[in-house]
Length: 247
Image (cartoon, rainbow, N blue to C red):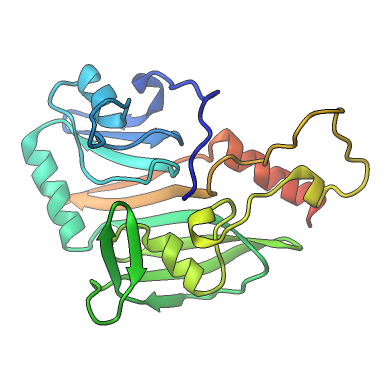
């Protein structure tokens, strides 16, 4: 199982993550390497803990995998939490993620409709008999020689849904070792003029899987909300290097 290398990662201040805030809602751009909620041991820094220091009544309305960056909604009061939860339950929240995947894959409104079974301990599988319904729509948005930038639109919200649905298309996310995704090294794409200092070990360009919650749209009691989160540094750097050396 893949583990994030976050030893050099410095957690930012919660205020610096905020993209939008009003009396009821906080929208943040979650950095990678930090969980959305408490883990079982309760000894890890996470978004919920940071949010409650900023606003004591804050609640995380949904979750992102620890390594996934991007848009995360937090309610500032129980009524807003209830209303947002209803929108998620009724599948009226429009979410779009961006992923960098290995290989060339031409997806145009590809619907993957494969049930997912949560086996516990963060393990899931495709199970047509016992799994819960899971649907994701994929569209390719940028091609490189050896990689593809893909837009992923989950209709449902199962654990690891985007990751495992892509894997069923033989299109694993870069760096997602759990689903056979391979990390990308600069020496792999910059074959000429690449040198390493003697005794140094090359590190992957991204030290996590390349998945980012890029856009979200929803409404609460007739008010429309729409947000977009810029790529974090590691995701943007990988794209820039692919554009330079793998186009």
